[in-house]
Length: 169
Image 1 (cartoon, rainbow, N blue to C red):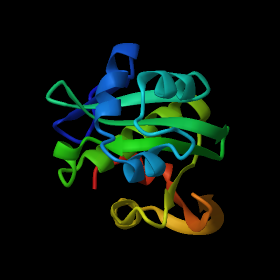
Image 2 (tube, rainbow, N blue to C red):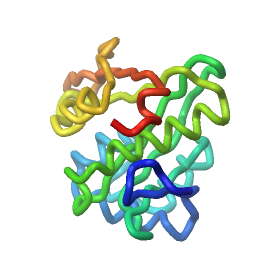
Image 3 (spheres, rainbow, N blue to C red):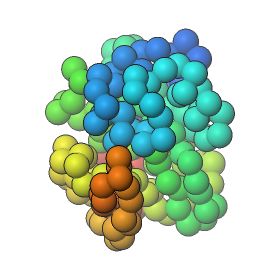
């Protein structure tokens, strides 16, 4: 589908896309931020198993080439949808891909479940994510204590109005 955020479009992720998404994960930190239960290096099998348990697996495209990925792991119809496994290809960062990806997820979640709110979560070490989500209109609403390699980390939960995400800024 065409996104209102030119030059981006999106489509459902296909099995043949998974190797491309895995290739964007070049270190253990990136993997932890994307998929904290996975083992580095991220494999197609790990990603496929996760997708089998989730909905709205989405590939963001720029001029037909994959540049972003996300899915939905929980939803409360009429209220909210939680978006996870969010990643933008390294070469597409800083070019509006994150905004287009969140717009695509908001559009699909609203169409399927009539949600009013989109939620995402970001670990405290992911400074790029912590700065990006508020710039897209997300506001923090909770912080959850987690562990990484036996050390405490914070998982910051954000939410945004679905209608605002779906409309170009």
